[in-house]
Image 1 (cartoon, rainbow, N blue to C red):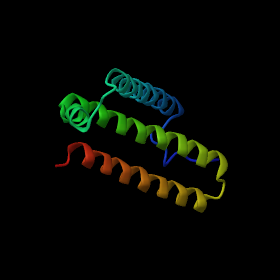
Image 2 (tube, helix red, strand yellow):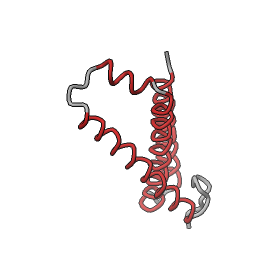
Image 3 (cartoon, rainbow, N blue to C red):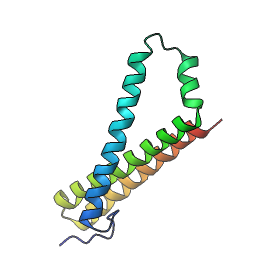
Length: 115
């Protein structure tokens, strides 16, 4: 039996809910970006930079980054507990995934809120 010590939500229901909520946030973010690109066919760097200079867009993007990190962790945790039966291999895989998600999340925050 696999313990849920590395499980993000600590229960199947909370993981399921986190997966669905993060999927909705990512879908809304994707739809917004696609719609913005469609309605601004002559988009240049100044307009794109101006969009991401606005605080609401930075917050929306940060929410999307956090949602992506949570969504990826729940999905990869589920896959690893289903298919990686050896505890050491599973732990190593999960440690690498956590590190990668953390690095990408910090990098995203730096890109959004950095100078």
